[in-house]
Length: 101
Image (cartoon, rainbow, N blue to C red; front, side, top):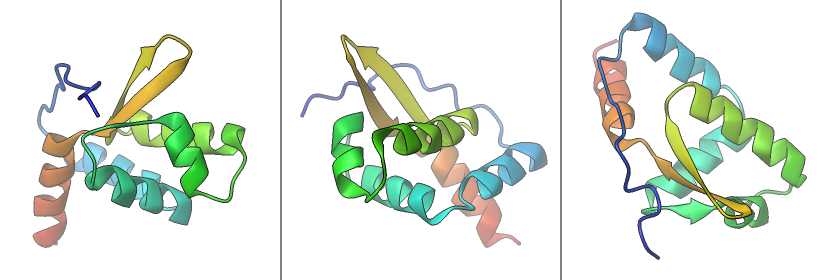
C-alpha cells in the first residue's frame, strides 16, 4: 500500500503535558489495539481498522479522533476515505519518556 500519510508529521518536543495526553489516549483497550495495528503498517484506511475491532464504525472513528488529538496518529482524507498512520516520531519519544519513569 502506498504511504498515504507521507506528509509532514510535526513531531516537536513531547513535553509532560503531551506525554500525559498520550497516556490518557491509550487508556482504552480499543485504542491500544489500534496503535498496535498501525505500528505494523505504513498506513491503512479507516475501514481496515473497523474490520479489526468488534465496534461500530462511529465508535472506531471516536477512538481515532482521540488518538489523533493526542498526536499519536496522523490522518489524511482521500476522497470519501481517511488514511491513518502512526506518528512514529511522537510514538518513539513517548516510549523513551515512558522508559525513564
